[in-house]
Amino acid sequence: MQTIAFPKASTERPDFEVRAQTYYRRIDLALDEDLPFLRGQQAGLASGFAGQGRFSALDPSVANFAGWYARVMA
Image 1 (cartoon, rainbow, N blue to C red):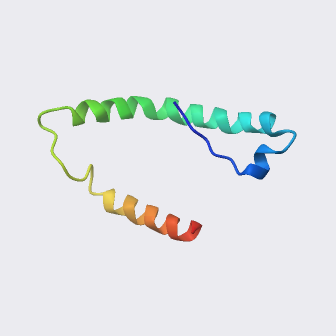
Image 2 (tube, rainbow, N blue to C red):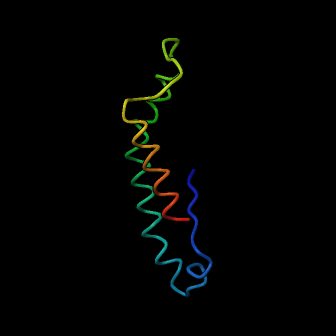
């Protein structure tokens, strides 16, 4: 399942449905790329050997980027 949000002004364009197809296709492609990794990740998390904590040493970088992005977009 996917959810895509568009600004109201975009949805009111007469060509919105045609233009939105590009975005829908891109999300579908991204999900198709991600699903094998997500399935593997979920299988690993279900393992009795899985412990709480970071997935990798890069997790702080991901959190820092997300924080920076949120500040820029605010």
